[in-house]
Length: 180
Image 1 (cartoon, one colour):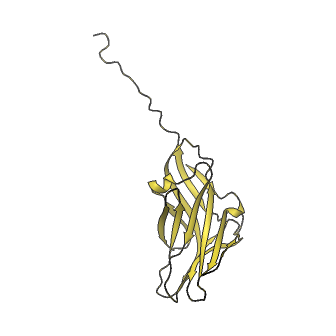
Image 2: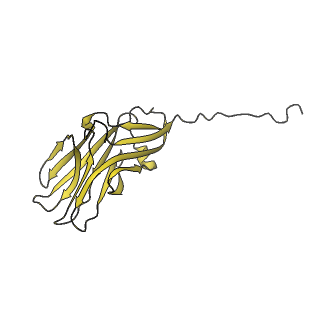
Image 3: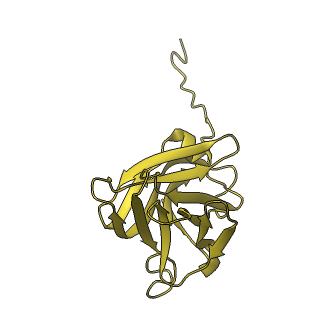
């Protein structure tokens, strides 16, 4: 089992987009924002991006398990709006979605076989975190701690991966009935 982490401060950041406007990207030393705000005009969307360096996994190794860890800093939302967020994992074919309910503090999510297959053994494994649309005149704001929040890497997202070289399929032979 090995732990893979964000390797630089710019491997986690968030974007902000106001309806009808362009995207702006923020590399922060505090928290990464995720949210949808329909109480303002124009409405806004914030999405967090995390890139974890998994290039040290040998390309021929087989990954048998992986768990993503993030630190949930805070969550506020309009009354009657659930405190949920989504973790997307962009892959070659689609986005894999994991729905989570905010609890605060460290949280983890075990990846399923499809998500494990999307781990990039030659570079960066990417995760995107966002909140669902809360509906008209409502908001959701979710924050996770960035790499630099306190002491660099104290609160960075990380991935624990169990991997090993593939089985060699060595055949053992027994000689039964020798000398008969």
